[in-house]
Length: 305
Image (cartoon, rainbow, N blue to C red; front, side, top):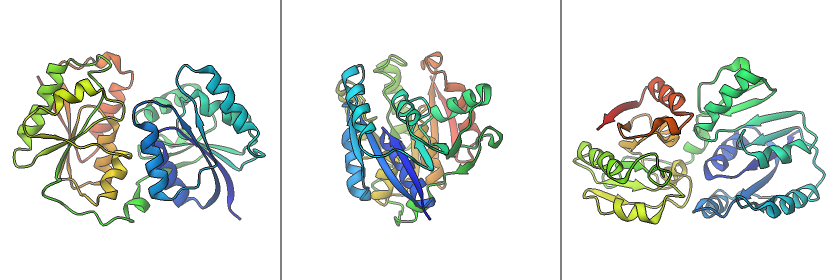
């Protein structure tokens, strides 16, 4: 008999992890998607729901700072069905909205999915403060912190696509909104991108913007010779799979997507380009992501002036 499972997600990557989890763990799933109205986040999730043919129980619009959205969405959730589950799957340990919904349902087990590098932060918090959670993660986490610890290799979804090397789409830079949040100035970010172009001299570098990256930043990026903007309409990991590309070179600064892509495509050269101008103290997770990069056999760390 299949377990009854509640799944709560709010980003494209969380949705991709939820899809892989549901494939590996047969269950009767009630999928609730929180939309935020920020950047292309909602559009990417809608595209993935369509492409992966997912059945969504409810979509809840909760915009940042809009208390009325929280109240209305909570009431919609509360009265949508009788909430008794074997398992509750959370896309993010740090999502107050997801945890609020989880707190009002009857359940036997709470399972955490990956939420980028926030997974590593959550692991640190759980190690220090405790808590009864299970986890489904791409990271090598300490099993003693969890009730159950299952490794996510994305092998089931990867097996659905025959990805091959493509000379035209061989090199990619995974963009981040570092300039927008003040973690790096535009000139320094351009130097990082130009370094990637030089290293990938035989291939055009396709720059995939972050889903909330500003138009002003992208206007500068697209003027860099040897770089081409390539907008993804879904999570970047699924974007590669859906297009059946097997990248040869993957660049980024400290994006967790570099880790996931290096795991999906182990033959690729994955390079973390760490600028001396990066304000690392702005990222409470910087040491954690650098440690995970350092342990990954396919990732090289390159320092850029």
